[in-house]
Amino acid sequence: MALVTPDNTAPIPGSALPWPFRHHALTVGILAFVITIVWRVLTVSHFTLVIGALEVALVPLLVAWVVWRIVQRSLANDWRINGFEIYVLLMVLLPLGAAIGAQREFGQPLIWGIFAFKDYYLLLGVLAVYHWLRMGWISLRQLEQALLIVAWTCLIYFYLATLFINPAPYQDTPLAGANDIKGGGVYYRFNMCAMYFGAIYYSARAFMRERWIDLLPALLFAAYVVVFRMDRTSMAVTAIGMAGVVLWHAPWKRLAKVALVILVPALVAVMVLFLAAPSKVEQYTFMFKDALHTVTGTEEGAAEVSVRTLEVAIAKRQVAQHPWIGNGRISHTWNEGGYEQFLGFFYPADVGMLGLVFIYGYPGMLFLYAVFLIAFIYMLRVKGRKDDLLFATSRFLLLALFLDSLTNGQLTQNPAQALLMMGLMHHYSRLSPAGREAAPAMPALGTA
Image (cartoon, helix red, strand yellow):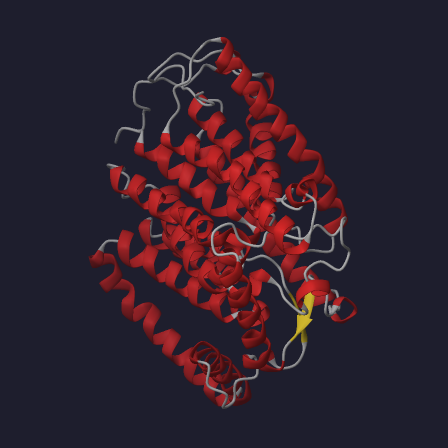
């Protein structure tokens, strides 16, 4: 049941490509659109209704495409399938157990328990992109350009919205919130995946290719996370991703040569910040101290402990009752109040990894986290790609997403973000150092 089978080892001539992929700009545009929807980077935005409608329209198309591919393969009596495809298809089945859990715990009909995961099934878009890549219909370069378009679109929109659209009217909605730890002001809760990509990509390009002008966009992406998003985990993973890709991929001689050039201005900037804005420094210090108190459970100075402790207690209680299949999701169509009617104030995304256990049970949580382990195994098989900018960025974006998922709802709400990077690692593992794909195991059957 191979949903993806490459047809040859050489690039397909442009005239032989399906129509949309014969035009470079159109191909990149399609990829950017699909990634935007599948990654859900603009789901929480001022365009929520439009993006939501596009998500609802795309899911049945993706399901129909997968069914058509399975029928196509079954007619050919060809049931071979690779490891990445197996993992994706098992991911498709994962919500079934959670839907049963919601039926047992909340009395929600099974069909509504499945519909509650409609956004989850956007991950099938990753399989479509993977298919196009393996068939030779798109190139790694086009995928890289599409990812950059998504990153820059988010960057420009996030800055414009933050600077010119008051978030106060959206307070206490998924779009915006307020927190005493973050200065008490209202801030936007935009998704940061594309910002991680941009910060890591331009940091890597600056040091790997000595394009020092690229440090400016790298800082722009990072600055939004630090100055405006102000999420502590996001700050940490951005810094780790940027530093990691530079230290791992840039030549040490180059790092030593530019260390003083960058280090001295950075130290001066830090000193100026301490002198010019001591209250801002104190605010960030308090934020991270509070994070430590929240993790350790101590009460002193922990402004978020009460809320998080309550949510953690709810999650632990429910996990103890349903450790194997979880508690599922509540469909707001079936019950407008969602979890709140049954559990009080509770959002699985707020409690990170524990939220995954709450929804899917321990086996489901381990299965979803396997995306990072499997991607790492694929990564170890990649040869001759040390200077490949997209590969370097992707591996550290995976690291950032893994770290982010430990405390935030990365896998709870957006599993397709890590899954796309996993598919990319699998594709890289099948490429020779010269960049040509390994010989296919079977011929392609038609187009999709």
